[in-house]
Image (cartoon, rainbow, N blue to C red; front, side, top):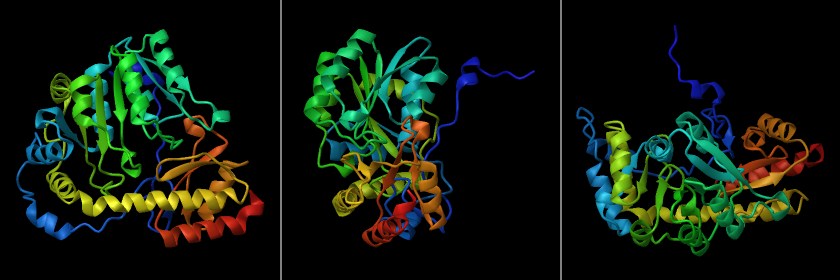
Length: 350
């Protein structure tokens, strides 16, 4: 007899971008190949010891950078693990959970497994998937939403909501816990007033170091919140959840943050250029504020397969509820030029 939770019957795996095939150029995920001193970092890491289960040195570095106390910080095996910790700590049977549509699929899977009730706030295609914060705020109150997952900039739309408008949501909905997924915010010019948010608002802010800081293969992220939430997340966190090399590399990135942060801005500039170029080919481009954008095509599967044959991987979005679009992440300038040249040659087939 198998013992499996009933909540899993309706749960499906969430498709994600990226590839392990080295012969493909990856335009399906946010990965930046930074030149990290890996040998030096490995020499600094004592592999024979268990990693610090509290990630204390890394939390101290994050604390200094973020102007919050280390007791307001928790580290995790990428932002994804931290989202799951939030689910385990804050979502139970019949918890009313809200999120946008379309958005990152793990929010729905977390909610389903924890037994919560998920409600979607639909973004409108005719408005280029731009969020109306006033309508959302009213919707949250009318639906009695208790936990809301807000990806900002949103995945896959790339649309960004200003800090001022986000704070309006917090102020008007103080009983709702906002899980602010800031995985892609390093590609914008915005800085979250973290000390103010942690002290004043009902929010957990989750950051990823695997996107703009190029360590997707190591997995590292962190969350900031008031001490009550951090205590709850620590209660459900596995021991030794962040390996020793990930802690060493993450601390290096924080200590040298200014050195690496400019690369994300370069990728953002490349996104703006590519959107403009593809717009001249009469593709429907959704405005984006990060390193990827949505593009409307008549036959996304054919579009993707044609590019695969030429060695380029992009992301189909049917699984995210936008079947007439693909998502394109940029790479370095030279690779982007090859990609655009290939699309130009194949243009008539789309």
